[in-house]
Image (cartoon, rainbow, N blue to C red; front, side, top):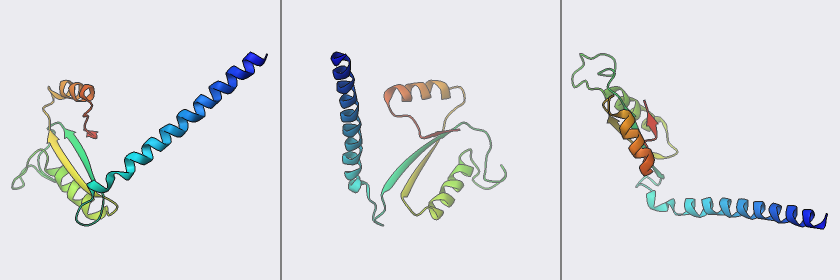
Length: 118
């Protein structure tokens, strides 16, 4: 009976210690984000978006300079103008539909996945 109690106490202590060390690790990482500040004093955040070619232009494909990423670039500009908490750097990449799965697997395995995939 004493061995069970000792074992359960040890397990509970290990869980508590791992929770405390996990939480303190996040705080240390977030305190080093001062290097990511932009000139406006806001923290800079990068968002990487992948999309497959679906439509051109913001509203219509006949627009001047219409391309497959035009709509998302327009949406990114609107988002940056409205969102004031962080300085968002949105990178939009057009990925061919037949290469999307392979590129996604390679980037997931390499630890550099995109933030958004359309």
